[in-house]
Every structure is written in C-alpha cells, then in structure tokens.
Length: 495
Ligand code: ADP
Image (tube, rainbow, N blue to C red; front, side, top):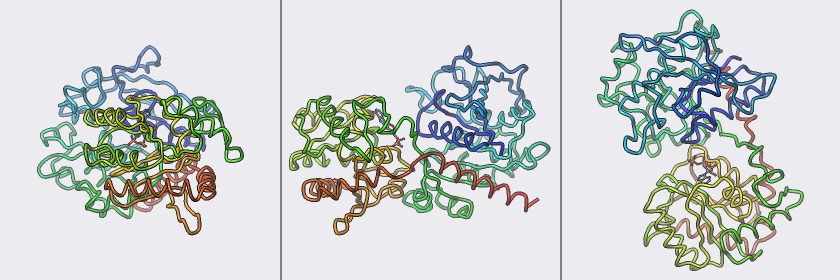
C-alpha cells in the first residue's frame, strides 16, 4: 500500500506533543510491514536545510485566487530500514513557516495566520504528489492542522491520480479543533456550498477539525475507550454529535510505545537492567532513584513515582492543589516515598516546591529529563496517573513494561491498558478509580500501599503480568492497515 502521512509535526524534526511521536513511529512500523510510506511536513525555520536534499523546481499551490510558491526538500526518516526507507518531504514556504514556533510563540500562542498556513499545507500535499508523480492509496491526516486534506480530497481533488485514493484522519487531542473566523475560508478556494454542507460551519466560525471529521473516509482516535468517550457530551468537546454520526467509520487504535527506547532489559538510562525472569536489577534502580532524589535508601518502603506535564489534563490539581490536593495527606499519613518529575503551570510548580520543603518523604525535580523519567519508571513501585482525560497515554504503558504498577483514573486509554486489582483473586495489573477527586486518589494510593505491605506476593505477580503485555507498534500498525483496507474496499464499491 502507498501511504502519505500529512502532518504538522514528526519526530525528530518538529514536536510539541504525542502526535509527533505517532506520525514517525507509525510510519516506521508500516514500512517494516512492507508498505511504502512517505511523510509531508512543513519546513519549519528550525529544520536545517543543509541536512536535506532539494528537489528541482518550484511547487505552486492555488490559494485564495493566487498561486503560493514553495520549494521541496527531502530526507529519509531516521530509524528507517535500508530496504524500505520512509521518505520525508518538507514544504518550504518562507512567509508561512520561516519563523520560530510551530503553531505560535509565547507572545502569540496561536499565530493569526494559522488558518492560512495550514490550509496551504493541506493543499500543498496534493501538488507534492503531482510533482513527484506518486499517488498514494491512502492520505492520512492528523489533527486539525491537516484536517483539510480529506476535505480537499473529497470536494476538489478526487480525479486523475487521486481517483482511487482514500483518506483517514486521526484525532490525537480533541481539545484543539482549529476554530477561526470564516473569512479565512477564502483561502481554501472551495465554494460556500461546501462550507455549509460539510460541517465547516461552527456557530458562524470555521472549524477545520469538524470539516475533516465529516469528510474523511475513516476516522480514528488513539484508544478504543477514548473513541467511545468522545461520543459522549462529557468528553466530546462539542463534537460528540459529529462523532456519533460518523460512528460506523470511527474506531480507536491504541498507540504503541518505542520498545527499543523503553525496555528494562536494554535501557541505557538505568543503572541496572532486568526482566520478568530476573527482577533483581529493579531493586538496584530503586536504590539509585532514592539516592538521586535525596531519600533514605530503603528497599521495603513503597515508592510512588510521577512523570507528567503539570497541566489540568493530568489531574494535577487534585494531587497538588493548595489546601485540597491529596499529596499532602498521602505523604503525611502513609509510610511511603513519593517522587515527581514534571514541568508546566507556574502555580503547580510552586506548590510542589512548597510541599517538598515541608514533607520529608516527598521529593521533586522541576524540569524535563529523559534520564530521570526512565529512572522513575523503572525504580518506582507504583506510578500515579490521575488524568482528567487521556486519549492514549504512554506513561502507564512504560510503567507496565517496567514492572511498576500504575495507579490510574478509569478513563481513556488508561482504561484500555490497565486492569484493576482484584484482592480476592489477585488478578489485575494496577489500581484504578473512577472519580477525579482528591479523596479517590488518596483512597486508591492507600489501597495500593496496603496491598504492598499485606499482599506482597500478589503485588509481585501483578508486576510480572504487566511486563508480559505487548504494546509494540507492530500490532497498532496492523490495525491501521485494516482501517485503510476497509476504506479502500468501501470506496471501490462506491465507484
Ligand atoms: P502527554 O503526551 O499527554 O503528555 P503521555 O503519557 O502520552 O502524555 O506522554 C507523555 C510523555 O512525555 C512520556 O514519554 C513522558 O515520559 C514524557 N514526559 C512528560 N513530562 C516529562 C518530563 N518532565 N521529563 C521527561 N519526560 C517527560
């Protein structure tokens, strides 16, 4: 199958969130399965043209009654296999992408011309294929920045080379939809009938994601449970109706994890490696982790870890909120140690600093560190993740892989990956709670700590059970292929 990923981010070139990891990891996994995968990205200012190869000749993109001209550069995606590399194409347009920031900068968080920049990117994808004389079977778009790709395919481009092409759109975060003044619709070169018939219209504004969700042949999000949740008013960010309407074509496919980077048997960041067959290394990592955070090195005290962006989505208010957060009473009442690595909202960073100065068993590092995040995942006994919503979540999958028991809220991808402890039978891989309240977090951490002291053999068995789960990209990639195939079959029947 020929697949073109149209995206605004892909590691290692540009990243603000999980979308960037998925685009690259999924592309590599699809290529390993033998498919021909290419990626189209903007050439942001920070991407050094000196490392890329230029493709001869300009690329013209019709937009708003004129032609926008750009250059094309290319390189292989790092990590590609030799016999079937993933080729990345960069669309270089100085006015749109020759600046700092992907979507914005601190003093202009959402660039005023974003609708124009990403309309350009989405349309340029088609011109790129023409220029390369390479027409994909599947055009796969990601989130609002490329949500116009399925719209253009359906209403403008489904002819000549694209006659048999189908589209897929993945939702990585429904909270961002690309809602702009409808004056910007002008840049799409589409008619107003399309605006009103395809769901661009959102209370007299233009909603790019909504238009994409109504136009794509298949849509998906990054876990089965989040696919269900987003069809409810509570989690639908006002698009639950659209998603229910498209429910036949809407699925959830769990993200995979990079098992070369996140593997306790070969992890380069941790002081000792270990496996389900020999867990002795985990105790060594725990000791180093305790030392790193200035805690007493005690093997038999339960250690709770957290690695997170400090934002509302992650439930940090209920853990660290001044006066009402549960961390204070958890550390005061329970014989545990608690370590945190994170950065984000200023109030939360301040509260965490204040807590760590008052509680001897609570230690935190504010910042971003790949190494410390591996140390916490491997060295902790429990990993706390009380997310408000969680489309997929990676940290709980890392925890399971490292024999660290996740304590999670029963939501989104967390519910798909963790099974709740059953203290009668010993079944399960972690500890779960339903309501996002400080007392639910307190009680569930308390339950886990109780089990640590009183049901030790069950705890050890749970660790091994978690470590045996398979979160590789290969099985996710196979599900994407199944989704593409369905879209192609339906399209063939329609013609
Ligand atoms: P989200 O993408 O919503 O932040 P995920 O659990 O899907 O949540 O992924 C978070 C990723 O970011 C994980 O790989 C996690 O280890 C990493 N991460 C978050 N904060 C930090 C930090 N302060 N230092 C290192 N890694 C971090």
